[in-house]
Every structure is written in structure tokens, then in C-alpha cells.
Image (cartoon, rainbow, N blue to C red; front, top):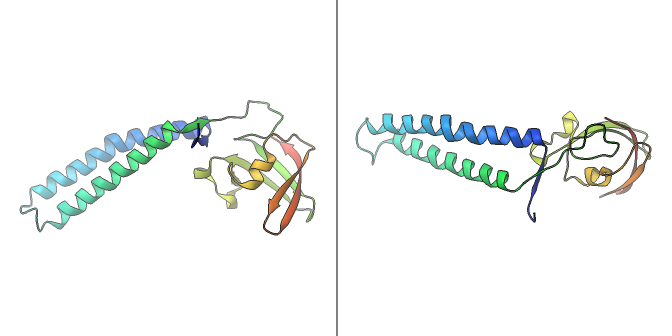
Length: 155
């Protein structure tokens, strides 16, 4: 898949549920807003009506975007008990230069939150770690030069 979107099975399911919620509850709420605004009279100068129509356009765009992401989804999961780093893996690494240890969970880019230890699967560090085993050392190219990371643990 050329422009695939890597995600876990859990992320894929959450995305499907979000689309379903938007297509049901979201559309129903917007339809109710439009109906109420129409009852207020002249549509040319009805700010509530125009606001509701804009909200409807934004909702439909969001639904289309999420549906496209579902179509391009490449569901990947590290097998339970896997001994190599993959999407969904929790990995403890040590920076050989600084001695700093960090714990990361490799997640889809849309779920990345580095401050919470959730590293985008598409990040250079994650890509360098993919396929590594406990005890391996990988090299990551950074703007300040190469960094060597040792894989201390893999959950």
C-alpha cells in the first residue's frame, strides 16, 4: 500500500468507532441544529443557520478524512511475546552517549505524545529500533549527529 497509515488493531477499532459516532450522533445533532435554525425564519440573515451549515460541512470533511484513513490503514501489531521491536512495542533504551534511559511505546503517528513516552512509529528513532532485539545497539541519525541506543528491555 503506497500511502498506507500504520496503526495498531486497537487504533483501527477506535477510528472505526469514531467514524460511526460522527455518522450517527454527529449528523443527528447537526440536523437538529439546522432544523431549529430554519424554524427561526429568513435564512439569508440567519446566523444560527449558517453556523449549523458550516458545522455540517466540517463534520462531513472530518468523516471523509477518517474514512480515507481507514481505507489506507495498515494494521500492524507486534505478536504477543515477540522478541523484536515493532508497532505497539514498549521498549527501554539507553543512549550510549549520555547514559540516559528512556521507555517508549511505539504508536501510530496520530497517537504520538513524546512527553508521555508515546513515540511515533514513523519517527527516525522508532524506525531505527524496529526489528531490534533486547541487547542490540542501533544507530539513529539526528541533526546533531548519530546517536547509539542500546535496547535494554522489550515488553
